[in-house]
Image (tube, rainbow, N blue to C red; front, side, top):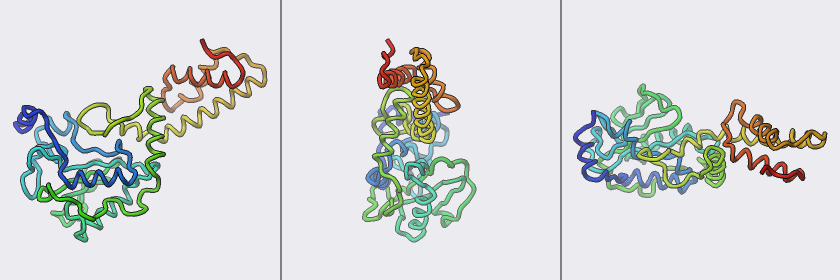
Length: 271
């Protein structure tokens, strides 16, 4: 059941804006090298907006504190845990909690990570919560809606072990393997296909690359031993080396790989 607040929001044209500390926090993450696709703000319609009790991912939250949540501001941010991309939430969460407890990060209302919630109203003493093992959630206080983070740093020096260049390139490669496109724009839960899921498959991407290398080695051995290089057999070999237990490889990508291998081996590419 949707709320009247949701109906009012739709009637107003679905406007939304990040509360100032949320916007500052997000900007600092991106500037530090966090891929934008790992950051979520406004919620998904079916799970956060068109619900009977909208929370801080909605621009009409029922849970604003200590003041009622002003329309149409979003007071929440999610960050996905991707240590292979340098985004280690175990490190970042420990820092954010220490800063909040010390009073240097007073903007935070609560944080959820690994099945526990740390709420300022409970002095940040951990309490049981649901989920949040693949991403952390931060909710921000409504009395700081228009306040900046000032000189406070959301990411301490050295907290991110890898820069965004490698992460973004990896995401583009994986996007090509999945559907022939590259991730663009800022990921939000509100619309489109969340590109964050591409980054969650980075381990599989590495396996795909290893599979391609294995396929090339096997095909080279076959060429040296005089085995025929029929295009269909070549494509099947590439598919088998990459797909088995990993990711589906689009036919057009398999064809391109087969053509490239065949060309380098001195054979005619596939028609």
